[in-house]
Length: 127
Image 1 (cartoon, rainbow, N blue to C red):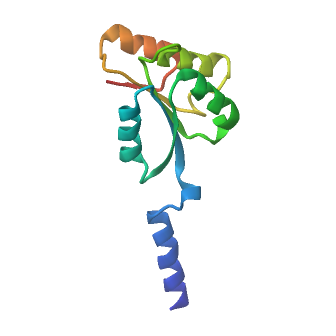
Image 2 (cartoon, one colour):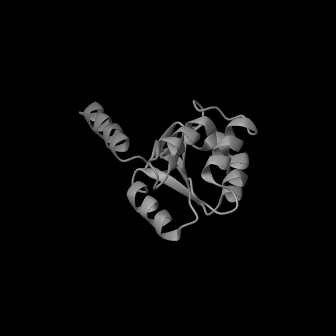
Image 3 (cartoon, one colour):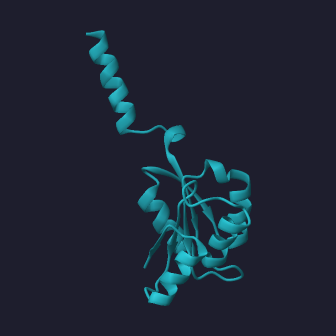
C-alpha cells in the first residue's frame, strides 16, 4: 500500500513539474504585447525569460546559455535583428543548434526570409 502511494506521488510530480524542473525558454521581442502573449501561452509549462532587444538577449545568453532550453526570437527588431542575434549565437558564441534550439518568429513567410533564417542558424522559422 505504501508503494502505491509513493508511485502516485511520483506520477503527480511528473504531471505537474515544479518550477525547478520546468524547461527554460527565452523570448526575444521588442513588442511588449507579443511578450505578454508568449508568456501567457507558455508560462504554465515553461519558465519564460524575456529580453526586449538583441543585445539584452546576448547578455542573457552569455550568462545563462547552457541553462536555456530554447530561444524564440522576433526577426524584426530595431538595432539588432533576430537574424543577427541568431547568427551571433551560432558563430561568435559557438552555441550549436543541438545545444540550443532557436526559433525565429516573423510576419513574413516569404521564401527569402525563411532561407535567411536558416542561413543564420535557426532550427525553425515560424510565420
